[in-house]
Image (tube, rainbow, N blue to C red; front, side, top):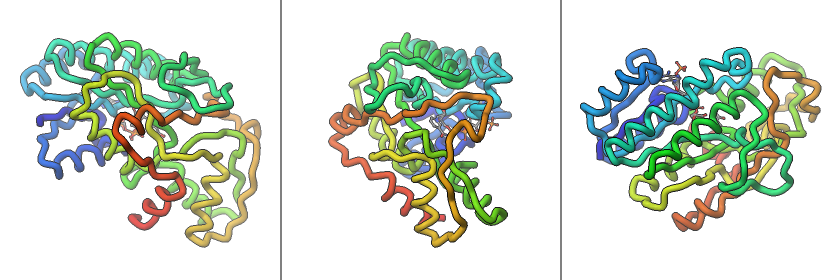
Length: 278
Ligand SMILES: NC(=O)c1ccc[n+]([C@@H]2O[C@H](COP(=O)([O-])OP(=O)(O)OC[C@H]3O[C@@H](n4cnc5c(N)ncnc54)[C@H](OP(=O)(O)O)[C@@H]3O)[C@@H](O)[C@H]2O)c1
């Protein structure tokens, strides 16, 4: 198949594009500076001429705190550009898969969020991603895959940040009052590929299975790597950030699990594989 992948240099899309190529697909990569998704007409013309069979929209303005001070740019990239791609997908009568986020939810729940639960984002990032979801739903052949707490080999992520901090600090504090599910990019990519042949359009969730806090996640990979730097749990309030984060953003995975008859790897298993591959 001929497959357009946006945000192709990013943490998720770079792995996705490489895997699709390995599987024999032709990938049309779109990323800055060559293809700016905000050049709506140019992007449409480029894709009309290239005539892809499927679009993965992985591009986003992902700096959650910076989105608070640049809401117009956040809306343009996370919402309007997604809407533009969905319009084109409708015109070409092809499926589009939009990557979205647990941050579309408020975090007030105490059990995993189902795909069809109402969204109530707390941040500009979450609001603009939720608007992107609504715009993408205007085309009949849409998939929205919400994921969370991504880490992978090709990008800045929480794991690498903490490992760097451990080299320069005698002790660390990590927040212990946000619950979610860390997700290894490689595991997400394997599932994203299954959507190429899926016809059950709609909203799906994928993370690694289980749940933890950022503190619990840190403890696990520090123990695995025998890092002796003491880690103390702390409250989000101790580290004020511009954007509010959901306190509880575990996603219910059953729809994805059942659709593809999957056994989703636990986050503890995923972090072991990530570390082996470093
Ligand atoms: N990271 C997470 O923890 C997480 C959690 C849940 C959901 N997600 C979602 O997962 C997807 C992939 O995230 P990621 O972590 O792989 O993000 P990433 O590494 O920041 O990749 C996003 C890519 O999109 C590009 N991009 C931004 N604006 C663009 C534009 N106008 N035109 C073309 N490309 C543009 C970025 O380029 P620049 O770097 O040059 O801006 C970057 O290469 C996103 O939809 C994100 O919302 C991420």
